[in-house]
Amino acid sequence: MRDPATLSDMAELRAEIDRIDRELSAVLAHRARVISRAAELKADNGWPARIDTRVDEVVANARANAARDGWDPDLAQYIWTELVEWSIRREQTALGRE
Image 1 (cartoon, one colour):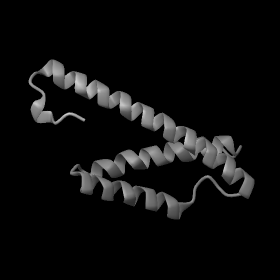
Image 2 (image 1 turned 90 degrees about the vertical axis):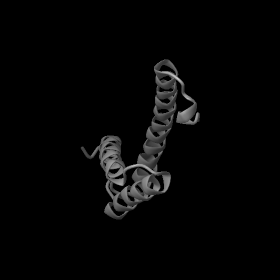
Image 3 (image 1 turned 30 degrees about the vertical axis):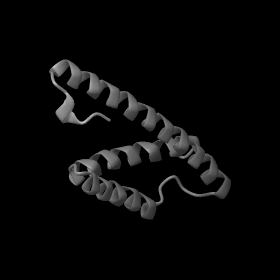
Image 4 (image 1 turned 45 degrees about the vertical axis):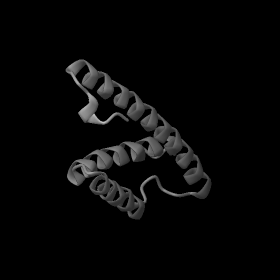
């Protein structure tokens, strides 16, 4: 990652944002594949898509990570809550429990 202070103009800044967005997309795609595997394991074990203690843990981790990394924990909570809910819907579909 480039230090934002080294970005001398808007073209460089936008290029860095675009690069970061590509990395975020790749990481989110990998997370989605991991969620698909989680659905397979849950099916094998008869587990539900939603496990509330795990949902709470993931969102709490997101808040803590944001605070540690110096960005807004409330925004992290919002993003991860949406991400987790999407993941649960994906698992429910895979489990045939829509």
